[in-house]
Amino acid sequence: MKKSIRGMVVIVVWFSFVCLPVYSQVGSIVKTVGKNVAEESMEKAFKREMKNYGRHSVEQSVVNHAFKKEVREKMMEHFGKEGIESFFEYGNKKVMPKVSRTRFSLAKKRMDKSEYKKALRGNNAEKKSLETVSKTNIGLYRNVKIIARKEGDEALNYLMQKHPDVYNLIKKEMMENGGPLQDPYWNKFVCEIGDKGELIIRNTRPEASNTAILIKGNTIKAYSGCAQDAVQQSPNIFLDYLLPNKTYVIDDGKYVFEVDGLKRTTFGKAVYTKDMAMKTNLDSGRRNYVQQFKQGRGTDVDDAGHIFQRNKGGINELINLVPMDNAWQRSGGAWRTLEKQEEDIIETALAANKVVTSTRRLLYEGNSLRPSKILVETFVDGKKVLSKILDCP
Image (cartoon, rainbow, N blue to C red; front, top):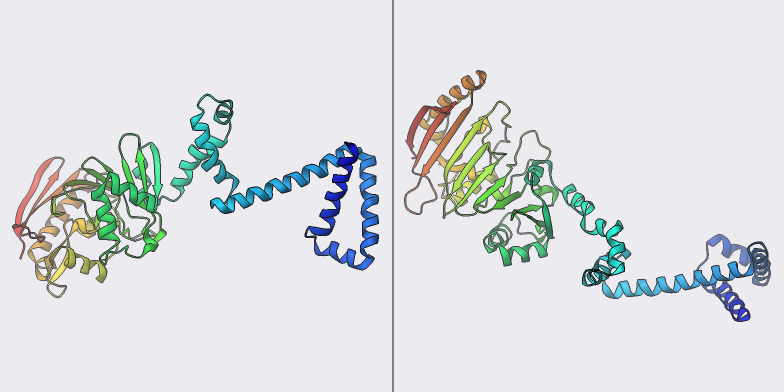
């Protein structure tokens, strides 16, 4: 037995020397002194190690090295066939299903106590997920316990099966037919499901990181984009492309909008504070969006008018924009005059530390997407101080 082991050791050592890749320095030495001299030197070194550490230890070490190398090569070959990139992924795909089927097995008990399962399913995975959330939308996770996460095509397939209305909004409107996310690059949507039925949908591409909503029943929670002082000033596209018959609670309740079956904003409420964030100026692209989505008459006649005025923090997404006649909504026009009247009330009340709430009710004729009338009401500490309805030209 000992002779066979020694023979194996010699074979392994010789194979390692002759066949395995070596560093350039070793190759240089072999070339300089000759292979015979190198072999003799190696044999002496091998005998010296056996004398110092014992024949059995050295033999076993070499055998173990050869065995591990062979196993490793077979595993890597298997990984290649299975499309697996790492031992971690192998454990996730191959080991965990077996563990889940052997509920009371010794293996499961050991893994429950180890860090492996935690790394796969626990806090680390959740922390990694939240690392991609923009600071704007981190509030969506407040008081929400995530129990499942899907990304990319898997996320879209989940929405198609469980939430077809949301799937159609994303796939058929945002990502097709000339939508803003029609390039496949933007298919980085993530769906996260909360333990109380919450559904968070967001995009992990940096340029679209503001695009995120939380849906629970008929209420949608969101944060607006286009902040003037933010690094990422992109809009929240979920506030451009709306879901029908929903109530949108935006920026932690600073704004509330109601949307009807035709995706028209029919009601809005704003709660004014001293720290209302200013938004960027509208560019031509967003002005054109208003014309396209809400039956505007072109930018030579209409402006992209804010339902709640921008200079008091009014958001720049389409949920707060409608086509308004240029002359009617600019300086000297009836709409701008009413806005200035309300702004004076807001500034006076906030200076006295009072609470100001403003509402808008938009009326439409038939199936038109363009409002025909807007009712404006302003409240200070709950008391109505302004109420006026205007016809939209």
